[in-house]
Length: 174
Image 1: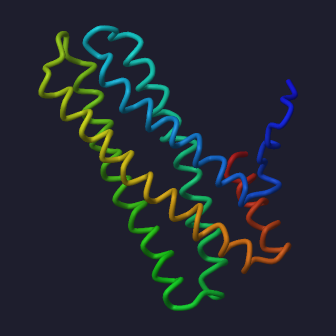
Image 2 (image 1 turned 30 degrees about the vertical axis):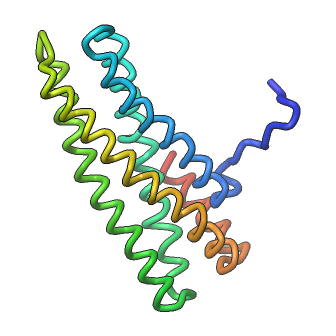
């Protein structure tokens, strides 16, 4: 379907734009994980279905996104950046590690909730707090990447490097 005025979809042929488009999808899944907490008690099946789909997306596409950055984008940038810019990239990697830890806890809480016949309000609150914490971390992280990393990549990488990132992204998804 063609939408008048809609932005063209970002493909792996344009890897920097693809990474930014993936940020929007990650944000949507994080919102779903938070919002689902409010439905666990009154619409359990729908809430856990939404949680499962969002966790699956983050475990698959979200993990590929992180690998795309850490294995393909960041190494190509490092040699071209100032020490302050390298420190920025290292802070992004540290945030990825922190997000992975929070995400593991979120999955644990979701499984615990789903296993209970009647979910305790305390456990739902723990889940909600963890989901909100992950969303908050990612909001700041994504904003930093959109506003700072993307311009760095566009400024520093040549066409051959962009093509290399695209090729590696395709190989990861093969």
